[in-house]
Image 1 (cartoon, rainbow, N blue to C red):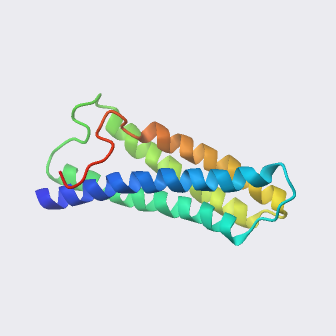
Image 2 (cartoon, rainbow, N blue to C red):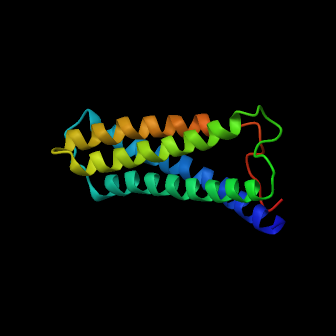
Length: 145
């Protein structure tokens, strides 16, 4: 079980960086079209979808970790305040919901401007939830340790 925990924790840590990079990419792609008359391209669409997908992967890995710890009677973030484990899980779920809403509204928006606005707004909100959920006091990169 300890090996599975280390593998899941490493994947969860690495996916954090994928989420942050995909979020920055989605923001850059969506901000560039908010004030202009540029078309909403397939690359813009992919950026929003990659951000949403990476958050979903992160949440699944996090819930697996949370369940594994719970089955062993351990508490996540034992070194922090007791409420942080629930804040971490809750904000992760909120970020996934916000990214999904943003992805859906971006697809359904009528014009290019509306697509860029929806992508920008919902990506910012989701990325804010992600940044609040990250335990910044922990090592920034954990590789199988």
